[in-house]
Every structure is written in structure tokens, then in C-alpha cells.
Picture 1: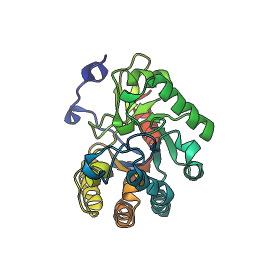
Picture 2: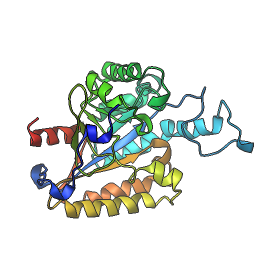
Picture 3: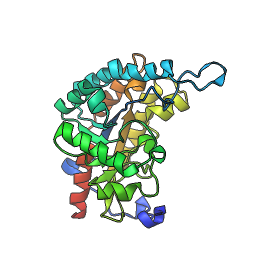
Length: 291
């Protein structure tokens, strides 16, 4: 077992040396499209419509179909929006998607999106029998499909056990994003070699925003704009990383997509904004640190 302070030291951002992005950049913006497979033979990872009387039902047709809409329609809206603004995303992908929904995986590969490990199917790592086997299978499936292993990892639901980081490092992963506690990358110790934490987000993330907090659709743009404006201002002094995390069945629906598109229309007007994939942020930070 490794507690947080055994993995990384506390660091106040005001005490750090300034970080500089290439080309005078202030903010590195990375977009994470979370593409998952849900198993209709088990409980759904999330639900928008509970069964009558509070029953737990299998198969859970309405909630599976709600997610399936994202794979059939929503993903393609998100991709069209990102293509329009020339954004290459990082796709946090359940590796089984490469086999069950190859049309989606092929489109992402053709668009030069980054494939980021996100488990095999959408299940918390605490619930699998052999965590190392799941991680290894996820890496191998992505490697077979894309020709290269994923460099980054986002746990399903950001889940980790006490041993996850060590296993990820041992299996060749280079960066993780489960620790949403900073605006800049930092190093995490493991029993194998250090990992880099690339900042992800629970705030500019459509699951908490829309499914838990139940905001209106425009909150997606409003919150992203306000987050960006402050990071952009602070980025004059030291670089910041801004993540935008979306899911096809949430942000890819007709009544939300325009607000997703507005985020990029807004940010594209500002100089000093770098639109990156997670692995590009990793390489930049490593180069700065001489690693």
C-alpha cells in the first residue's frame, strides 16, 4: 500500500519555478473523449432512468440504449465538431471498443487521435478478479489495433486500487490522469519507475455537470469559458493545463452539442493556446524536466 505522500510530495503552485509552453503558449488544452463499452448482461455503470419500484433489473434496456445512442450517433457529432476546429483528441477508450465498435476506433485512428487506456470494459478496477490481467489485456488490445501501446491511462471512473500505479508502470504506461489535484503535470513514484500525472478534470466534465448536478445544457460552455479565462490569465506567469472531458451519450446529444462547439470557437480566438493530446503534454513536461 502506498499513501499519497509516499507517491508524491505536496507542492504549492506559488512556490514552483514557472513552466513555459512552446511558442509563448499560456494554456495547453486537451480534450478527452471517453468511449466506453457497457455490458448489458450486468448492472449499468450509470442510469438516467431507474426501474419502477427501485428494482435492479438485467437486462437494463433503457439505460443500455441511452449509452448505445452515444456510440451510434453522439460520437459522430463530437467528432464532427472537433474536426471542424481541427482538434485532435485523446480518446480514453475501453479496449473492448476496438472489437465491439471497430467503426468508432477506426475513425479515431484515422483522425490521429491518441488512444488512452481506460480498462477493458467499463468496470471499476476494484471489482475485477485480476487487475494486472485487465491492464495487460487493455494495453495489448490497443497495441494490436493501433500498432503501438497506449502511453496514458485513465481508470474506469478514475478508479485505482493501492497497487494500480505500480502495475501500470510495470506494464509500460507513462502517464496517468486519475489524480485531479493540480493544473500542472507532476511526477508520481512507483515501484518500477516514475509516472507523470497529466491533469484531468471533474469540473469540466459532463458526467458530474449534467448527470449528477443536473445543470442546463449551456453550463457546459459557461463553465468551460470561465475555467479557460482564469487559466489563460494565470498562464502569463506559468503554464497551465486545461482538460475538457466529454462522453458521446451526454455531450453528443442534439441539445448539448452546440455548447460543446462554442467552447472551441471561443478558445480559438485567443493567442497562446495550444491544443494538445495527453501524450504531447507528457513529452513537453518531460523535456522541461530533462527526463
